[in-house]
Image 1 (cartoon, rainbow over the protein chains, first blue to last red):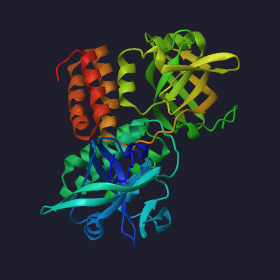
Image 2 (cartoon, chains in turn blue, purple; image 1 turned 90 degrees about the horizontal axis):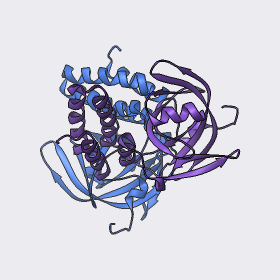
Image 3 (cartoon, rainbow over the protein chains, first blue to last red; image 1 turned 120 degrees about the vertical axis):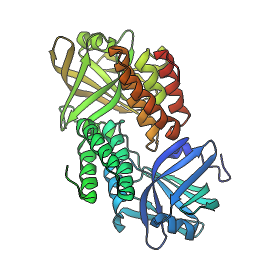
Image 4 (tube, rainbow over the protein chains, first blue to last red; image 1 turned 90 degrees about the vertical axis):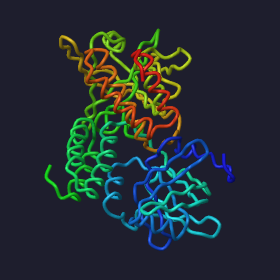
Length: 199
Length: 199
C-alpha cells in the first residue's frame, strides 16, 4: 500500500514489468507504450531522452499508466501519436490528466524522485489516483504477445539500424500469423507500414 | 453469433488461438491448457491422444474453456492435475460441467463434429453456455508471455526429448527473470521441478 491507499493490483499493475501505455501532457496529450517496473511497493519508470513522454515527464513530473489489451493501439502509439478523440481527461486535485478511452484501467503517478543520466531519466513514482474504466476480458493469445515483442524489436531496428532486429520481427510475425487474430495481424501491418519494409 | 446467441468475445474468446485451460470430466474433473482455435464464427479444438482431456472429450463430447491469467495455474495444470477444491461445477440443461474457480470467464462447448486421425482429434465446437466469473485486470507482462511459451516448449521437450526445446526454455527464462513478477517466477520453478532439471 501507499500514501493514497491505492491497491494498484486491483488496477492491473502487478510486480515485474507491466507493459502499459503512458499518457502525458495536459495541453496536448501524448500516448506511448512504456514499461512500469514494480518490485513490491516500489514502482519506477525509465524513459529515454528524445521522446515526447520524456519531455512531458520532465516538465510535469507526472504520468498516467493505461492498461490496454488492444494490439492495434500498442502498434499505433509505438510509431505515431493517437487521435485527440482517443483521449479523455480526469480532474484530480484541480489538475487535469489525460487517459485513453480504451484503457481497462489507468493509474495517475507522480514522480517522487527523478535521476538523470546522459540519455535516460529514472524516477520513482507514487500512485495518486486510479480508476477502473472498462471491463474487457481477453484470453491470453501468443500472437498478441508476439506483437508486443515485435514492436520492441522494430523500435530497436529504427534506432540501431541493425538487421538482426528485423530478423526477429520476421520470426515473430510467424507466431502472429499462426496464433493471432485480426487485431494482431492489423498491428503487424501497421508495424510494416511504419518501418516501410516488405512482408 | 451462434444458435445460443452467445457473443463469445464478451467472454474473452477472440479470433486466433486463445490459450485457455480446458476442464473436462463430470465425475472426476481434469484441467489442462489447450488452445481454442477461432476463425470468425467457427471454433475448433485439436487434442492429442493420450491426454485425459482427449479421453474425456471422446466420452462426453463437451468441454469447458476457462479464461485464466494466472501463470501458476497454467504451469501446474500443464504437468499435473489441479486440486479438487480448485474446481466448481455449473448445471446446464440438467447436466453438470466443471469449471475453475479462478477463471475470469468460462464457456461450455459441445462438439458438433469430431474427426479422428491416428494421433489426434479435431472437432468443431459450439458454445452452449458462457459465464463471467470474476473481474480481474492485469496489464500485459512479457514475463507471463514467456511462461506460456516455456510451458509449450517444456512439453515438447518431455515428448521428443530433444535438447533444442530445453535451450528455448532457458532463453525464455531470461525474459521471465527480467520482466515477470513473483507469479511468473513461481511458474518457472514449477516447470523446472517437473522437468527435474537444474536452473
